Amino acid sequence: MSFNILIPYNFTPNDNKAIDFVGRRYGEHEGVEVTLFHAFTPVPEMNIKETPVMKKVVHNAAILQLRQNELKKALEAAREKLMTYGIDGRRIQCVFTPVRVDVAMDIVRLWKNGEYDVVVLNRNPGNIVNFFSRSISKRIAQHTEGGIGLYIVN
Image (cartoon, rainbow, N blue to C red; front, side, top):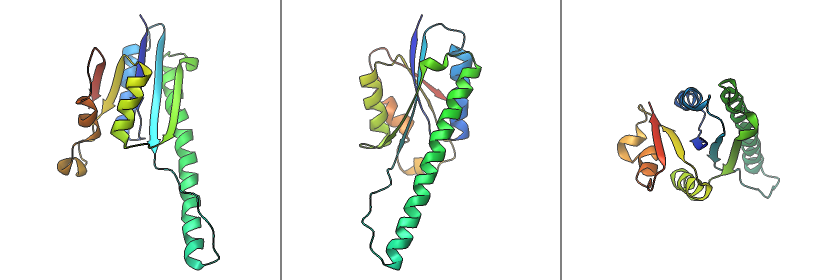
């Protein structure tokens, strides 16, 4: 039986738990397809003017760009970790893309368009922001419908 699995990934220890869950649960299955998805805020293009403030802004943007390159490499490391569970590397896709609307809605759009069977989320139990607003996993869960499997790894 084949499974098409979506794992939203944000480089946290809980995301590693999601990787371990997918590896243990689906690593022995033939035909498993996995998509690791990370949405980031893009670094803006800037018109450089010779002012001290703009030089600092450009410097900070360059640092953000380096950080995004590091995250791309970290996403590839997560892919390699999935491979250690026996999932074929040719069947693991890494999607590193700018945020379109917001992260939750971008994930919903991706799994609705991508025909995924399973979405594996995690929750961030200590995040104070979730006290004031609904977490991404809760926002995604409200959109599940029609046979998609949703796992929330704790």
